[in-house]
Length: 389
Image 1 (cartoon, rainbow, N blue to C red):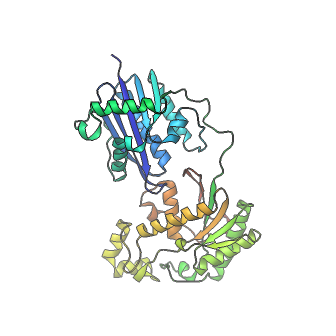
Image 2 (spheres, rainbow, N blue to C red):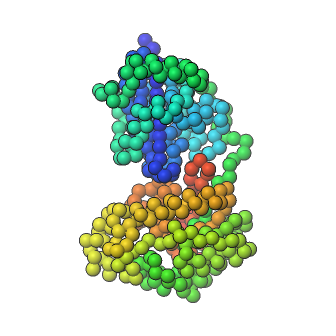
Image 3 (cartoon, rainbow, N blue to C red):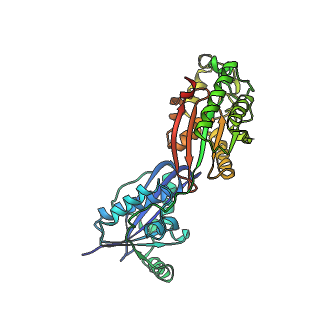
């Protein structure tokens, strides 16, 4: 006997990109019974990646249940239109996910896609939010509590009737190519750590104190400027932290690039290290051993009188969004400090918090991150120091 199922799938990201998760519910079409639920985190990524992940999880669960026909219902118009072949996929990062979904579609005799409003996708949305809160369930086993996760038979009938009155269900034939005729331009950020200061050379915590570049730091800044000019002959602007060590580095980059404008972004300022400012790691560990240990274990913990990495991450994401909105589709240099650049790279690489204490960034080192309009991210370079040799 053939089994027809409804797959309701969703995904979300708190920050776009940010902590993301997906949810999928597989429902027996004839009875409205929930046959499977799946939800999981997908790290730090975009809404679109999370939505495609929910679709894939739902199709996998339907295949494992032996379904022969699948009606996919999602509130993501982008996924529905792209999988239906009406929209091409401009973001290259989404094409592998779409290709995976297309391979899964081949397992069924019939697959259709229907867009539904968000309020009719509450079960999958709830699972996606549960995943973003740290939940995980990839079991395709039947769900006991149908009432909380699935519609009743009467509600299902209403929803099917509403769908019939709305957009027609589309039987999918995956397109021959996911690529569009022309790629949408990415916003490229060339991330540059400021040159060396006296405190950098002594390996002291240097946060909000306005420490100038040393003579060696200025030489490093000049070398980084030449490197940026070579990497980006079309550089549109330089955006910098307001502190003088960054502003001086930014001025050298602007000069080497032919006088491009320099903009100041307060959100790019270094972490406030509070009472640890100006001290070495060894000094802090000796005087504040318990506080240091808690700080190393959690990004939510701040140095005494200072700022947590979690707080820095929040303002850095705001700064990144503002910079991207102002310079979409162009190449810009972003001059900042160790902590902000690490946090930008952590988000871009979907890395864990351990990344922050494992990545080393040299003074005047260069990293490159591309971001597309739909939120997809590609990291091209991390801590390039060839220009300093």
